[in-house]
Image 1 (cartoon, rainbow, N blue to C red):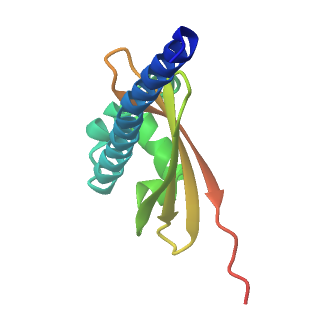
Image 2: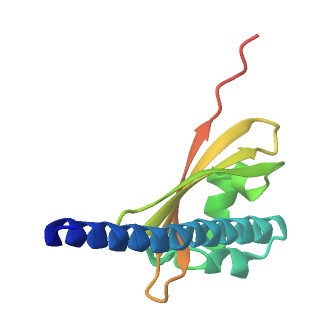
Length: 144
């Protein structure tokens, strides 16, 4: 094998090995993000303000500087997240630089309506994820 072809083969093998090491980290990031979301939902269901608030990112805590304000905001504006019927995790995407994660959660609200909650999670300096925002999208009514 010519030296240049050998170098290209070695470089390709190294890149493939590097890409394989990234896949589990990305899968672990998605699992970690789902665990944060699920833990916060469970805290809402238990009316555990302190635990639910602990999963909020620093920017959210700046906007809602105490647990009571945060909890009131969630109750008023995010009833499907606060009191979900059923929920299931959908697609997730990790930011290319690893700084964040977007997670889709399919939720049935307390009134039986279906929603998609798009969670934005932010990686913290310790490597954990905190919830930086949630966008609620009402599911389209079924066509009959």
